[in-house]
Image (cartoon, rainbow, N blue to C red; front, side, top):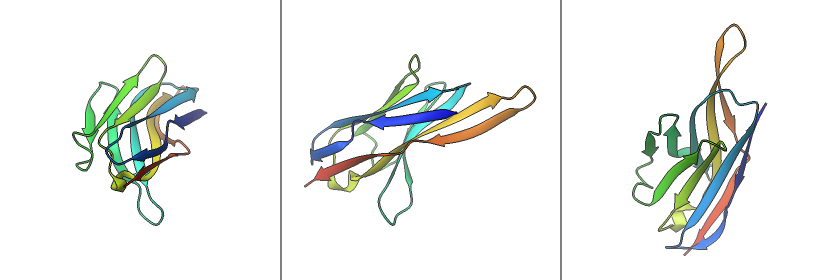
Length: 123
C-alpha cells in the first residue's frame, strides 16, 4: 500500500510564507502526478497545484504567482511553497498522488490521499 504523510502546516500571519511537504512511501510503482488540494468545512475540496511525472505544473488561478509546487523524485516528496499568504488561503491542505501500477496482467491507475495538514492565515 501507499502512504502519504503531510507536514509543515501551521499558523502564519497574512503576507507571510509557509512550506508544506508530502512524502510518499510504501509500494510505489510509477507516479503519474502529485498535487495539493485544500478544503474548508462544508465546502468542496479544490485543486491548488499539481506536478506531473514530466515536471509539468498547473495552479489554481487564486494561487498563481504566490504558490510554487516542486518535487524531489529521489525521495518521492512534493512541496508547496506558499508566499504572500492571505486569510482566504486558510484550509486543510491535502496531498494527492496518482499512480499507475502493474499487477502482472493489467495496468491499474489509483489515487491516494494524505490525512491533511492545517494551514491558518491570520489577518
